Image (tube, rainbow, N blue to C red; front, side, top):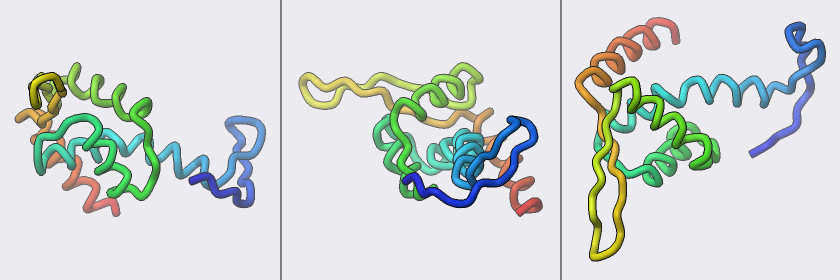
Length: 116
């Protein structure tokens, strides 16, 4: 995933940051809306969300990156989770978007369409 390219000056950090680092920072900021988009389509467990993000953004995100965002979205009442038993022993947490999350997703989508 890491591709080394020419460095661009970054006056805020007093050094230089590669283009890929800047792209990664922007993508991390987009993860919240990307997760809302995924859950707008269907409720999923965390691992499935990680896999869909990989396909959607063509990047290799780890659960360590995604789960804190899921918790943040849940604390902000944009998504909710439900513990579901799958089989005799496996218990999974399934995430779904709330009405508030749908409203915010719709608004952000409209803005993003105008910007991009």
